[in-house]
Structures are given as C-alpha cells and as structure tokens.
Amino acid sequence: MVLQDGGNDALQLEALLAARAYLYTLFHKLFGGEPTADALDVLFGEATADAVEEFAQGCETLAGFDSFLRKLAQQNREELLDSAKDEYTRVFIGPMTLPASPYESPYRSNEATLFQENTLVVRDAYRAEGYLPKAYQHVPDDHVALLCHFCALRAASALDAFREGNTEQAAGCLRSQNTFAREHMANWLGEYARQLRYNKTAVLYPQLVEALAAFVTADCTFADEAAFWLEDDDATAGSSGEFEAFDKALDALVGLPLPYLSDNELDLA
Image (cartoon, rainbow, N blue to C red; front, side, top):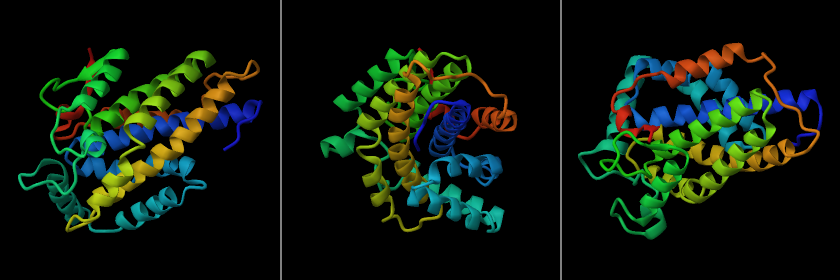
C-alpha cells in the first residue's frame, strides 16, 4: 500500500489501523482461550472477513486464510467446535507433549526450557508500556497469546491517537510496536507454524498460526510506511466516523470471555 497526502489516504489509513487492532485482538483471544461457540461466530463473522481483507491484498497466505475460513464456516458448527477444543488442548495445554512450543524463547535459544533470558526482555518491553501479565511469574511472558495481546493494546493506542488527530503519537505507537513485532514475533512464528503442521490434525490452529505469521510480516511493512506518512508535516488525521459498525464489533471482541484466557492476558502494572 502506498499512502499519499489527502483525505482518501487518511480514510484508508484509519481502516487499516482499525483492522490491525481487530486482528491482533482476534489472535490473542483465539490463542489465549479455549474456543467457544461465540468465538467461532466472531471468527466467521463479517468483521473478521473485512479485517483480513484489508491486509490480504498482495498476501497469498492471508487471501488463502480468508478462503479457508469461508469453507470452514460451512461445516457442522457443533462438530467443528468439539474438534477445535480438542486441538486447542493438544496445541496449548497438554498433558501430552505439545507438538510445538507456543513460546518465543525456545526458537531463539534452541533450548526447551521456559523463563529464559529472552522472557525477561519481553517482560521489560511490557513493563515499559505499563503492562504485566495477569499471571505474572506464573506464565512465561513470551507466550504467543501474550505477544498478540501486547500488540493489540499498542495497535488500539495507535488507532486512538490517529482518531484524536495526534499524528506524532500515532507514529510513535506504530514504530515502537513494529520494533517489538520484528524482534519478538516475525523471527519465529513461521517456524512455529511449520512445526504445528506435524500435529496429527490441522483443524484450525496450524492455519491460525500461519495466518498470524503472514499478518505480522505484512503489518511490519505497513507500520513502517504508515509511521513515515504520519510524520510528514502535511499528514492529516482524525476520526472519519465511517467505522461505527466495525468499532462495535471490535469492542465486542475485546470483551469476549473465553476459558483460560485470564492466564494469557496483560493488565496494567
């Protein structure tokens, strides 16, 4: 995407800022909590399709993810939910050995242990923005769901700053989150997705991780470009009022309760 001066570009930027806040929140919910009927309704809903579409242009993986969701939505919902719950347990909880680690550190150190040095680096990044995990010191800080939640919170801050007309703050949010995403997400999610493909089933979660990996890559490029555009003296910002329905869907998603989610959420420090 190429942003230029003008109202249409500001509207396009607002749409993308809203979409990225939605998608990071969606991935946080799906990786952080056991799926429910309400969660599947959100996953297959119009707001999710709209958000994915914003980033699917030029990204084959996200375009394929959109098609995957459309096909998956046609399955028997009760049977799909049972299968998704089983897969969630195998992928994130156990008790059997997980098919792939959902934590960043093992991919950086090639050591399977948790609470490594990198875990503390991630914790410091959270703390610098005023957050800590709700299950502080009980759950490793570099769980994929916590990483997504941090990006969701920072994405919401960037969106709010843009709508308030504060281009400098919006650009700063984008740049700081982009640094975090490049250092703690883009460098291992692709391998995580490849390892999950060896799971005995691929109902939903291997595809979700593949989509997240592709989205983070696309979002890093977008965040760089958007921050550069916002730092231009002629950049315009402010709420267009065009996204009321989407904002309601995002608010509902933020408030969506899921089993086990409290173990994988950030809170104000």
